[in-house]
Image (cartoon, rainbow, N blue to C red):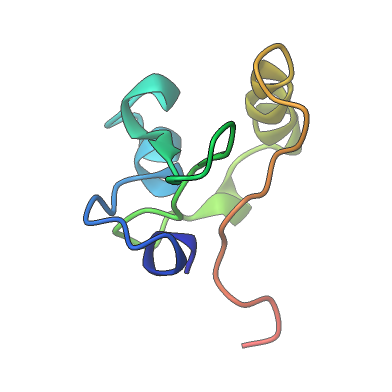
Length: 79
């Protein structure tokens, strides 16, 4: 996971945004590299399939004013 890669102790992330437990600004993390931030997958299995694609697109679009590139940490697709 990105949290492990960047050696972050904080694990909250996308799953908590999806469930409404946290806001984006509460879970975005600094990587230790200047100008690089990351959003961990989160603690629990968020049911991202249950969300309308418009909601996910809106969430991603909300990142655009602050970031040039957005990498999303998700579970393996082919698992």
